[in-house]
Image 1 (cartoon, rainbow, N blue to C red):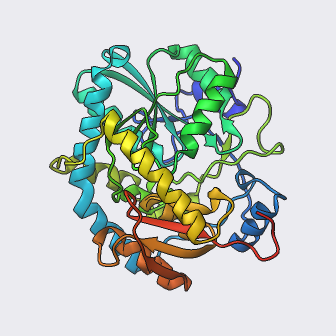
Image 2: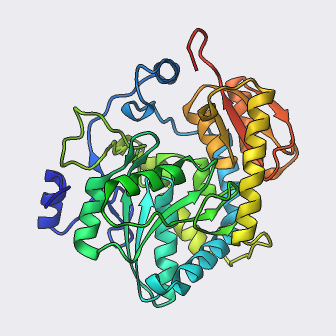
Length: 372
């Protein structure tokens, strides 16, 4: 069967699919667990900006955040669990209203931020009477989606009922990668992307255009089944393998994956006033384009990949990259309090600035002497 790694063949034989620390009934991860060494964050940044290596060829260490940051995460979860629950229900209802996915739906989460959202959407679809299957696959900017994983799914379910799932849009890079990959891959999947929050206006379907804290976006592996970001190198990923990941077993004592899911499931839904519609998405897309161009001009950025807009992407840039500055729309806003904490700890300046529909953005520092 094309696209099956030996690990997945073996897991099928014993009927135990790889799922990180998620429950097997919630998701099957079409990823290849591998032993992957770490690259220092500063060295990784140098290699990325020099063009010596693609970001997908390296992993930087993921440290469990300090107690203060974890309290900010808990505060965000307490404050926004109900809103996320409501938005997931809205998204599930919209999926269930489509003729293609009214009876059955194959959710394909984009690793790794899409996975916890995909689990919640799968559960919501089940409550609506829709038979849902859920897989996680890797997609890498500049390298494409894992076509072996998609062949695996197509062989079992076809392609007509597939919906790709992510948590949010930043500036639309993953949407464009999805469209490009599926066009060139020739497998028959439509690039239909459903997200909770679409401040970039780039999704096919969403619950809201608001940029708000989706609590899982504040953490890394400890809320996504102890899975690292995916890695694609020739020594780890053979022609028939799925994209690789590191299973972060050393973080198991701090794993919050199930706590996050159950907290959202137990919350009373709160429904957003900034509902996603095609018109709202078109306006968000225009605003996003304008803001990104203004930021490139204001901060003399020639490579748009150094700008990470939206709360989740801006947060991850502080955690995983070398930030030059953090921009927030409102210094007093509770939604970005965790970013101020991270920035203070890293000695990174914070600037209050109009960001249109975005609450925050991080600008990656240009490595001295490197070409953009």
